[in-house]
Length: 354
Image 1: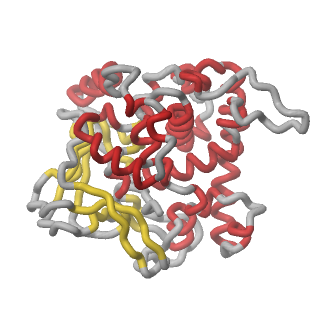
Image 2: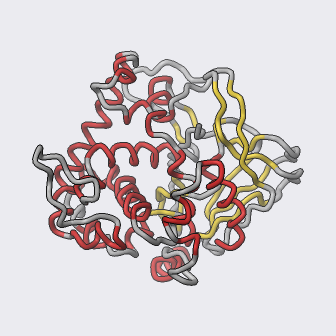
């Protein structure tokens, strides 16, 4: 995460209030728009979904005219990763991508939805507040991806769902062969993460499911009345299944691998940015910021970028165990972890999608 402290100004606070009222909910021209329907995306494979999504960007209000999607070979991990590519030459100081707040998924999105009462349940749980923001985004993504129609359907089904949680070691089940194959220090990091998620699920999410079932089931996302089977397992259509500890752990891991953490209207926030969260780790001279005046996330180039080049972003400094646990890879410049993490996150926390 980026840890930039920016004192709020009266103007930034005013813009923030306006954003809360108007910008956090994506524009929905019609609930019957094809791209908003879950059924529009499910029949297609990942490549077809991605192609459809990239063609749809202008209609969604995203301005990324020179950005495409391709796969790149990474010798260090022995496989190809999906990432962003420059379709045309990009000039020095050119804006590469502009994503309006309405298209981002953030805590603001959750606050402006029927999940708002659920968020208030965490007000007194200070110990979990840091994780709660990412968890709230995860619950929102789980619901919007499962419901019949959503203004976020295009991004969730064409991009986010293509990120396999199994590629993020900290989400692996402790009894799995993949988890047992991790070195002990990485296992310890993963266990700490999963213990925090389990505590959050027990103290906040499970009670919220009981107190606000309509919010979790909105749009046909799940059936809050579905009974457990004879062996005690939750029905696949039940809300208990959709928001199970395992599902929340996996989606939360992906959220933390893809999110950005930057000042927005005077306050540092976590958020998911379509298209820009496909930038893999590296340094090619790209910078980001949130423009309060334009209510948009901006990605721009510090130097010229050739057509065909992979668009990369330097996430920050991570020790080896932390990088492997959070992203599934270890940057060549990473050093061994010493005690508690002292990483200095400087932007996206995104692992390239397979």
